[in-house]
Image (cartoon, rainbow, N blue to C red):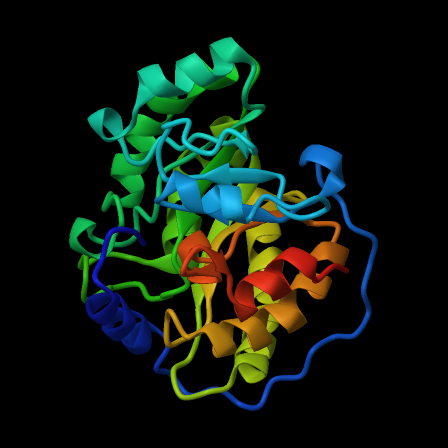
Length: 292
């Protein structure tokens, strides 16, 4: 998701999250953190405005950032580039420039190929993404960068009203099953996204998120036939831009994320919602200061 108006995005995400859910129960068994992020801190920033990242640069907090492309607009952070979509939809020259400078050990794969472009996705069928993946991504792996497989939405269906095709983990299963050899993608991690359920408070939505991520972890491992690290590169409660809901949500999920060894990195959607009038807002204070 990116570059949508607040009203359109909220309406879409409300639809995606509309299915009723029972009151969730969270597994309280927490394990030690595991990540190769700078200083061992998984916390990162998903941003559009690079100036916002300066406000969020605090000792012991976020160490990396990305902006759905390769523009180096967050110089205080390790900047992870993304090849946004198949073929010409990615900034290959910009990614190579980052590798040339030694700026990044990773390249993120396609952004939400299971969603249409009008809603922020790169819109590619599993077959289209499969056919492009090697040409798009292996040039970076051949230079030593590790790859993150395409970031998928949490809208899980075999026939999306937005694309007419599969979405979410169903899209990922079909993508990875082509050729019956998931190792062929040369991915060291899988990116997932999640958006909440409007009308619920932040702490309730935090438990929904934890339950979803736990479930996704198991399914991703099954799809790739091995333990795969997760990067959770977009996630937020609904409605978007509600500082207090986001603050209560982050207060629960950050300690949990930090303690899961298979969650390698995470970045809530988005950095701009953690800052108001040039200063950290309540959600920003929780984001910066909360730890596992």
